[in-house]
Length: 120
Image (cartoon, rainbow, N blue to C red; front, side, top):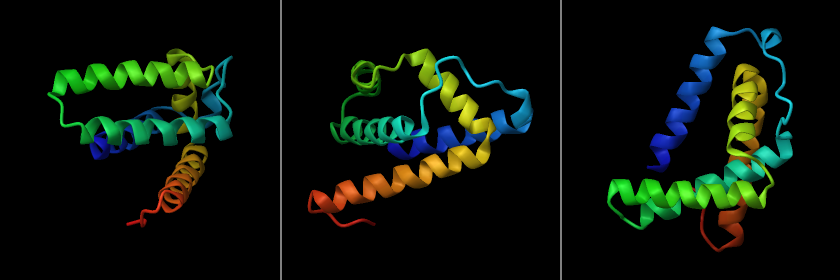
């Protein structure tokens, strides 16, 4: 599930980016700042990994993921809509999304090392 989600995000960012020019997209009113987006995306990927490891039936895993994702949004004081709009904005500005994901990967690697794991 984790790899599918990451792949889906990159594909969506490419599709959205191909359709619009960065200057055509106005930042959303509630743009999630890049540093908050990094932390939120890192936590979403960890959540996705945990749900995937639970080996639940697909519909149960999807329901659990959505419920837990909503809790993350509340913890970060972000709405589902502002997250999607911000992600779309950063996706259209491809370099911004690349920078965000480089930091997400670094963040996840540091967390893994801190927890005693070894990065792949």
